[in-house]
Image 1 (cartoon, rainbow, N blue to C red):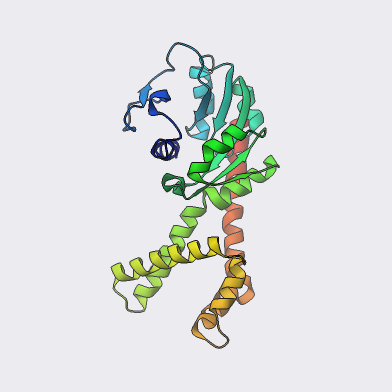
Image 2: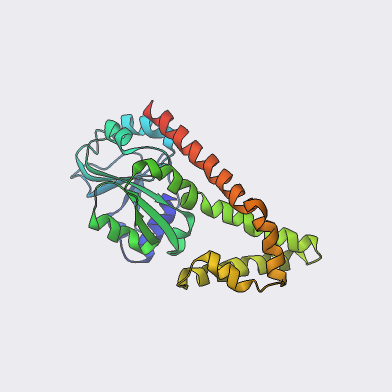
Length: 249
């Protein structure tokens, strides 16, 4: 995810690759001009550091690099489930902001949730990635992570299921997939531009007694779809809370 964000920032001209240094365990393919290594280079502290490793690696990273970045003005963290208090106990930073992006940031159509002290420069940095939302209550960050951070995975599964249903009813598999992807893409763009809610749009598409209405009747029966997605987000949010507890140690 950190790599997707970096590539989008450089593509959008937000960041000069010459000003970026990536610390990693082994060299990776990075945008031209970006330097990398096993440790932070000697010299003045950077303006900001972003943590992009796995949440369970926080203690190892703090032990290996915490001293090198002590006093950094801004620490950004995309670690799912790791709270600001936990980050502050491991890293000395002027300000800490939690960041939760999702995969479409790679094309500038993502969502980035933020929690921490209000910071206009952080918001400006995230703008090229897509929709930026500040979350006031950190307790809700696990829910936000489940909805928008994990959300693309759930949407991809829906697309696959929609295509599979078309295939089961006789469409060629590749054609059903193209139709499903384009349908979801166009519907999402229309919902984003509409002045009414997706619920209203759904009812506008479904004329009384028509085929869309018959299909919606299946999804709406006993709130089947809403209950399924509530259970889905609940499971993801619960895992985020578990990771937070694990990170606290």
